[in-house]
Image 1: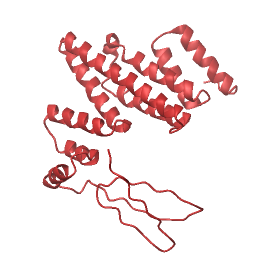
Image 2 (image 1 turned 180 degrees about the horizontal axis):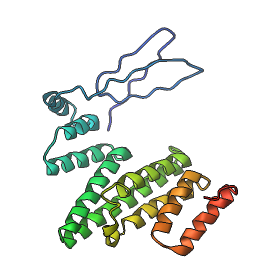
Image 3 (image 1 turned 90 degrees about the vertical axis):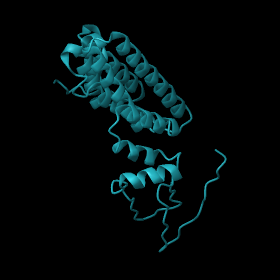
Image 4 (image 1 turned 60 degrees about the vertical axis):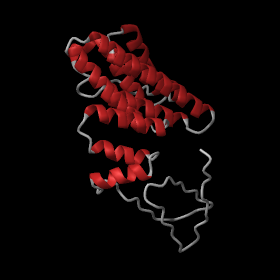
Length: 230
């Protein structure tokens, strides 16, 4: 937490090599044409990943690579939790974790383990509320834009609650579509004129068969695009 960044200027005709696994950022001070290349981690073998994890224990990138070699579901979930802990604002890691937990809840539901199902979904919903709070704070501070918040929420909604397993029509009792609707409706508050977002919100709302809410969303679509008649 006390580590200070290394800052340098790269001039015309110069280049810089950033060591493997290092966090970095760039800022153009004027109109700039530059080329860059990032090395993929996919070529690493499992032994190398484990060595790098030991050398850089706080690097979520290496934790993420270790997950790809893990066949043990419990270990996989622990690694995912660790990646989220190190990078709480990396919503890709959180999305992956939420999807795994929703799928685990579905498996428990199908096996008749209702207590496990309720606990897993309660944890998912708690994490989602934490995510919404974090995004709201980042937006208030001007760190992320309204469209960026809306994008993250839509992406999480689609990946977590509209994956093939979660869309099983026999799972209505889990109210997963309501969770997706909640994320889409929140996204709409950040980007109320996004037609693709409104289309998704209309689709999920009408699927839930909430006639009043469905009509309301469809009218919003017509307000944004009066020529839209689909």
